[in-house]
Length: 345
Image 1 (cartoon, rainbow, N blue to C red):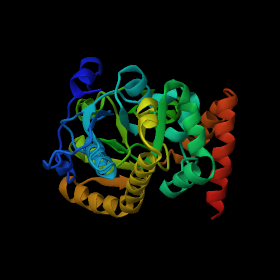
Image 2: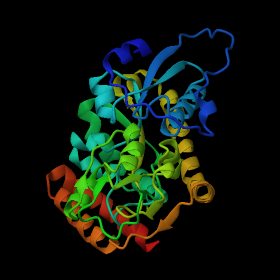
Image 3: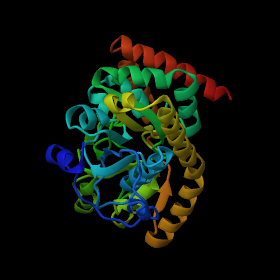
Image 4: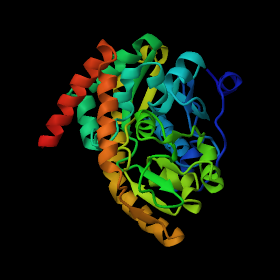
């Protein structure tokens, strides 16, 4: 599908603006001699607005890496699109998707284990990668999306230490309005808070106007892209989840099946390299950004005192999910076995 056809059916997200070190990744590859083979034109949808840095630039960088891996036999156009791969690929005609799994969990509840669990049950980047590659997570994920014609590939961890941003320090989430996603939203409700649904472009203005007391953001890079530190001076470290969940590079099954085994191997290797770079660079990048944000905006980082209650409610939310159906039980058994192994190493 070409860009024009996709844009005719896809819903573009709200625009936001921010500079980013990865902005150069948006540039088209330099023109080269015309290849003798036919180029496959593909559309990669990303939930972040095109005008923003952060996730959209990550999608562009990954698209360029895939083009190199496939030796310029594909040309990938990155566009803003739906929040999940099911809607982007199965419903609106994109060929690839890059982003988190929260929206897919609305279709397949078991995918909440991939999107990210609350509290201490969340896995760090290394643990999540091992769950995917060695403990059955990747196979369960693929099986969960098979009926939708979506082939998911683990593209890295969405964030090692999510932050809850607010204009004043939070001693409790009870009676507070919070913008978050996935199972963390259920935790907020269980704590007596109110969930505020916001598009990415609304978060900064919602904080500034008082429409919401707090916004959970997976990474500091994303917070900068959304201009959050300009409106929220206080940053509670991992109050709802110790870590975020998975990012996916998902492909429509017809695209995946059209490629040769060699091409598929090249794509898998390229995406895995990308995920490992994210895993390696997340901690040092976060340290640098934390210092820079503090110097620029006087940000105060603190530990949320509601953490024990958050963990209890989070475990109850996960237990309820695990008992929902046979698929969620399978995910829960595999995930908890892997989580337990990681805790022992």
